Length: 100
Image (cartoon, rainbow, N blue to C red; front, side):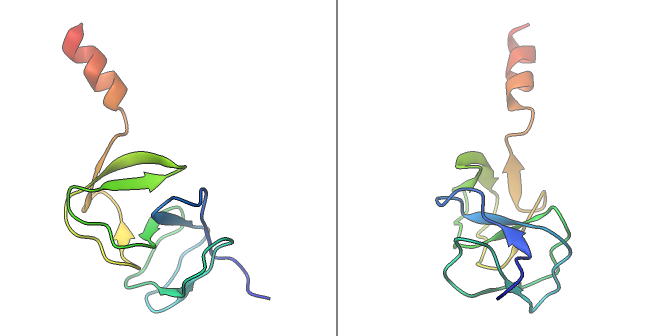
């Protein structure tokens, strides 16, 4: 039995979250993840890795919801973080400030 090193929260998510540090070359293992995916770079605990190709300007999905937009093409096994993701975090607050 394989020990999970990442979590796939919803079946339609295109990222998993690392449960602990994952080294480049290790296989991402998550319940519900059918394909073998190799980490293309180190993925720190709590950070995201792509489990599907994510094209530039395409939605990044976690929790079954869009959490941001890809700034560049993101390959399977790549780290998904601030360098390649325009996050929705705080979007509601920014929109409220615009109308205040």
